[in-house]
Length: 117
Image (cartoon, rainbow, N blue to C red; front, side):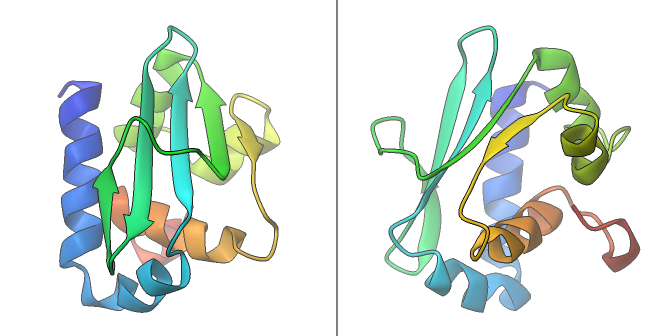
């Protein structure tokens, strides 16, 4: 699966998951950027009670890594927390809102409660 289709799948999972509604509302106005070191940049904008892809939105959260790290994450060969702790991902975020982002990413990656991001 390409990175483009994986990102779109993540967005659809977040939109469909009734358990994410509160987090999506609380993240209104925030923009989560996935920046791949080869120059690809995806920005998930939280607005109007939903999440959408918006390449022109100004990011408030940044997740940066090389293509292999993102592939490993999206294929569930690597847990997000492990990628952060081993510095394979560079993350910039608001520590107060990070639990909300963590929940959104867990749903987007279809991780179970024992595998959360």
